[in-house]
Every structure is written in C-alpha cells, then in structure tokens.
Image 1 (cartoon, rainbow, N blue to C red):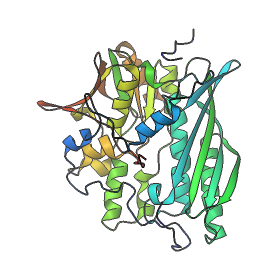
Image 2 (cartoon, helix red, strand yellow; image 1 turned 90 degrees about the horizontal axis):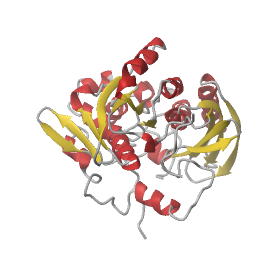
Image 3 (cartoon, one colour; image 1 turned 180 degrees about the vertical axis):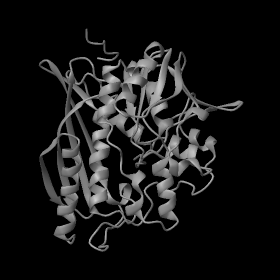
Image 4 (tube, rainbow, N blue to C red; image 1 turned 45 degrees about the horizontal axis):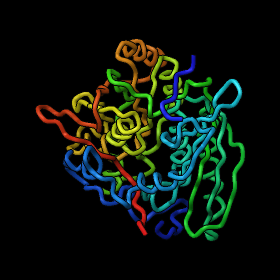
Amino acid sequence: MPRGRGRAVARRRRHHGGLHRVRSVREGLPDRGVDLTDVAAHRGRGLTVPEDAERTLINQLTAGLRSQRNETGFVSDCAVVPFGAEDLIATVDGFAQATHFPEGVGAEGAGRLAAGAALADLASAGADLVGVLAAYGIPTDLDRATVVALGEAIATRVETAGGEVLGGDTKPREELTVTVTALGTCPSGEAMIRTEARPGDAVIVTGPLGGAGAALDRIREGGDADEADPLVPELRLEAGQVLREAGARCAMDLSDGLADAATAIADASDVSVQLEADQVPLHAWASGIESGLAHALSTGGDYELAATVAASETEGLLSALAERGLEAAVVGRVQEGAGADLVREDETIELGRGFEHRFATE
C-alpha cells in the first residue's frame, strides 16, 4: 500500500586550462573556531526568515503555483510525479563558477561536483537513476578542451552511477554555468519526502560530515583544491534505495548542512528534530579541528543523506546498510513540537538554516 502524502557570479579567467574563481565558495564563513551559536543565526522557532534568503524567494516563486501532478507540493528537492506503475522523480540543480566551484578546482572536479550534487537529490528520494540532461553556459573565450573535459566528467560520474547523459543544451554566457537535470524512478508512493517525519522516529545520517568545510579551510590556507577529495560528493544512490526499502519515510541530502536539513524536515513535517552533538560522525578532515562540528552542521557540501525512520525499524535499517558496506549513524530523534535543536553536553542550542544564497529583495 503506498504511503499517504501529507500535502496534496565573479568574472572567470583562464587558469592553466582549467577553472578559476576569485572568492571562496562559502564567502563570509569564519576560517577558524566557528561558534555553534552562529548556526542558529537566522532561522529557528520564533525567528523570521530574512527577506533576502533563498528560502523566502523559493516560497514567493511557488506561492501561486498549484501543481496537480507533483505530489511533493514543492516542499522537497525532487518532484514526484505519478507515471504508470512508478513515480517519476525529477530534480534540477544549477551551478555558477563564482559561487559553487572552489578556487583551483579543474574541469574534471567541477563536473564531478555538479553531477554528484544533482544525483544527491535523487538519492534523497530513494530513486533509481535513469539519466541526466546537462545545459552549459560557456564564456566565448573559454578554451574548448576545458568545456569538453567538464562534459566528460559529468558523463563519467553519471555512468558510474548506472545512468547516462540523455541530452542537454549550450549557450554563450559571461560566466561558466552548468545546469543538471536528473531523472529517476521509484515504486509508486514510496519516494522519501520531507513531510513524512513522525514523532518517535530516529534521525540517521549515511556518512561522516564536515569534510567539505574542512577542505575549504585547507584551500584558504593554500592547499591544492585538486587534492581536496571531500569536496567531491560521494554517490549515495544505493544508500537512498536501501533507506527507502527498509522503511525510511523521509530524507534530505546535506548539501547545506545537517542543521539546515533538520530545520527543513521539522518545518515540512510539523515536528521537532533534536540532534545529539556527540553522535554526529565527523569526517577525518574535520574531526581534529575546532570548527569540525560547526562545518558538519552549517557549511554544507557533504551531500550525505539524513533520513528518519521509525525507532523500531532502526536496527534493521542499519544492518541493511552495513550489509552493503555503507556507513550510517543515529544522530537524533523526532519529537512533537517545532524547530530543530542540538544537545551538547549540558546545553540545548536552537538550530537554524545552514548555508543559503542571498538575493535582492526589490
């Protein structure tokens, strides 16, 4: 029986045949010692989402839309559209050089990042990958070899995951941009969506966090971006499928951090999410630095999955993941209430959104 649905850039220039960007990908983040109270800076219970926040703009863009086919109602990162005996799972993700590609990352790294980030949305639904379409905005003075290397990296990443590039588009642009539309399928009514978390659920993450933020720290300090492996998302499509098959109701990828996911799930499901600081698994690059936990919570870029599952099903789910050689950890619980909190030693910190883009308000 299908589960019920709860709701109907800076200038580019040549750089050794690769890509170059001027500002850090998370401009404005402190380099060291991020205070955990900063994580709650602009979103939480009783707080107003800033007018220039990405979430505000998305709400305004979708306010007048009334989709009769998208079962997620614009709440999740993926659209879920009934299509015969299956549901079509579709998502689109855009990348601009100045915003998304760290300084020094070459064409191959940029392509792997763009493809991996889009596939993470499908993973969060528990989808089986079909393929992607890729659209490129290309500066007219960017050398052809770089563009081809970027496209080949996207294709390789997708093919490794069991899909294929189905088509795309090219247009001249002042700044290099890549837009990836990813398509997948799920058994009818089984896609994991943000509105399905329930009080009593356990919150699970699929791997260590904070690595991307720690990698950005190293790049700021002069490290080689091409050696910053945590910046390239792990493909979690298999983990998403195992989560769905094992009974997980709700999931979200951690592109913008664990705090953002916990808050978004709490808002969409009308529940409270409580995380335990000492249960959050940290990436090897993040575990030895003062800002490691803050990176896991708010920097984003890890692209692991956070999911909720009934507490009685947690042991079986963890076993199913382990049988596939996949890591996972219980990091919190879902409760009645609103918002998201982090329990650390003897204090409870109200969480807010992680990284969000900012836009003009007029």
